Length: 210
Image (cartoon, rainbow, N blue to C red; front, side, top):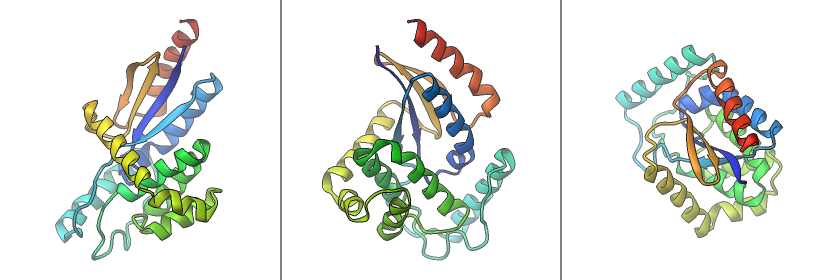
């Protein structure tokens, strides 16, 4: 029998940052039951142009709402400065590259990307910054940089985006539970841990008995 969680998210999605402590706890809960979690970057915004003032204001208001709802820290001063292009594809691709090189290290890299963007105000859309973070997560710098730039990594990232769109997933974070190829939805959108922990617990118990 094959069981796993599938965490569909974007490292530059503010609600995914708000959900990060919940996701960490649920992933640990599943791991303790012998169930791994597979990370799928969903592609919140790909490409695009520099943010204009009204879009930046809208996004920062959204961040404020996430901060108030979840308690996660955000740096608002200087966030997304003039000329910033909110393209999440490079950060997603960094996670795909990490997943292909050493799957378990994808989680510390994800945490570093999220903290760098939301707490420190760093531009995580650039290859040098992402390679720096990958090195901090324990990857060999040259190996990661090569994997990040490869055409097959770009293709795998695009395939992840297409898979997510094909499932009709319109919002992040989304957590799916998969057993023998059958998907069950645990959450689409932010929910607190106290609501999701018992739900996951029941699914893990049923999976163990199946």
